[in-house]
Length: 448
Image 1: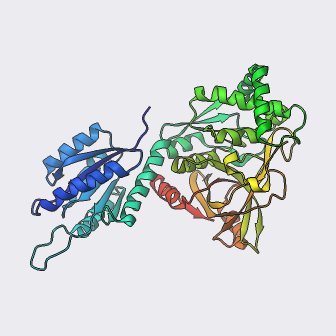
Image 2 (image 1 turned 120 degrees about the vertical axis):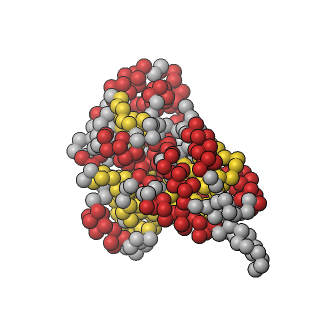
Image 3 (image 1 turned 90 degrees about the vertical axis):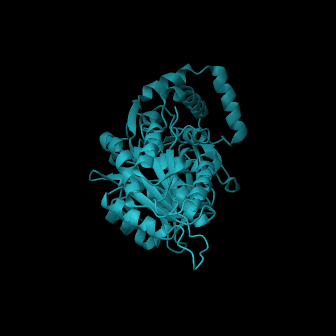
């Protein structure tokens, strides 16, 4: 099923303005939009729009194309009727793109007056409470085109959430109230529906995996990692769970999911930390401890970047280095491992009831974030930073992150804002993208 963002593109010009420049912009900017807006479907209206008849013709085509967003290229000065008509007819956001003026001749008339037009049109859209953006610059101007791409990327991410299914394997662990979720608020805010698969389904599937498949997988795992610290039977359980999830997951239709990884899985000696890390690198994303809100954040991070994420606790601060330590039981995907510091596939680091990676994670720019439901309203918590080379000093997966925020104030921020204990980390600078998405969804942003 196609889930691409559909974008309509028009070039506008009021009747008293010469058409040569708008016609040129129609061709140039229409081609740019077709070629440079990522994995979207672009519908360019191939006429200049300046009258109500032309507007209605464009609207009809855009309606048939089910556009989610319209880019209005200011071919030359245009009255407010065109942009307002787009919004009133289609109820979609409008990007007003005003190219810079061509070189002027002091004895010639003004050719476009695009910046003034975009300001006027934007003010009218604001009065209609219509979502809109103003972009000023040419299609060879990196600052302008980066803004266009960022807006489109944000709307594409929001569009990708709508109607998708987030899976629950079980509920939340015992006494982890912050991992509970409000299904109705999730659907209202993000357009995501929740569906559940009982843990028993996993346990039953694990039993059905043939012995020869398990043996083959055990040999494969031992060829990749040091498993000497795993207690008897734990590697078999690791392999059975890994193979069981790979077998059943495709049929469930989950875009992303989370799992109640203890106490039941621990009681069965199969806590899944390392399994979750391995599967993430294979495109099966299951976050831990039944934390839906952290999982939704990780899902958005993945949609924006295509990269795997890491769900973690913030466990320590270093005032000297101005770093925070993110740690979790052992769920870091192998693609995130810092092999220089050594990697072990071992028992669960705390409970001793499953499999987990013990390692540090790689360096690089990171964005730590979380959407949290507080008093019936989602908030986006953001903590951008840079992961620095880290020496593992306890069992599990860990990485130190240098932040812009003085760490001496961080605990106070957490106390004041009600930030939960799980963060979703992605190795990419997407703080601005997440802020834009939060704005689209009407979610306040909390900078930690």
